Image (cartoon, rainbow, N blue to C red; front, side, top):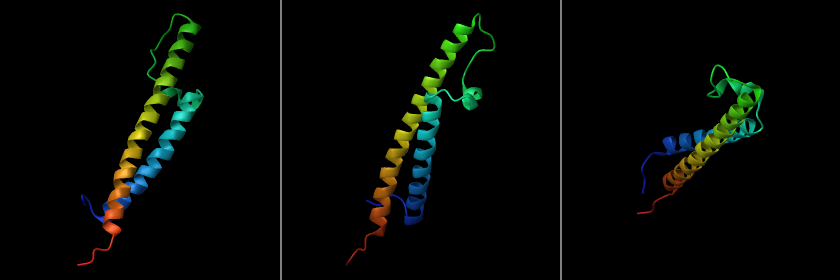
Amino acid sequence: MKICGPKLSLCGLIISVWGIVQLVLMGLFFYINSVALIEDLPLEEEYHSLEDFYAAANRAYNQNAYNCWIAACIYVLTLLVSAQQFYMNSRVTVN
């Protein structure tokens, strides 16, 4: 069943592939606690001790990594739908 046309399905394929690559890499960088991404963490302004800050930062890094990987999985679903639509639009129908 066709839902979208060939141009939209191709656009969905391209955006899905890019989204998967970007989110998997971002998830990896969050997972290894990349300092460049510390501004993207939901941290408080002040902590009572350095250990509290490290614990909160580690939790936030891990949560953001999992969020990126979940979003990448959603992009995989979008990729599958777009690929199915691209296949349906590229088939030649014989009357």
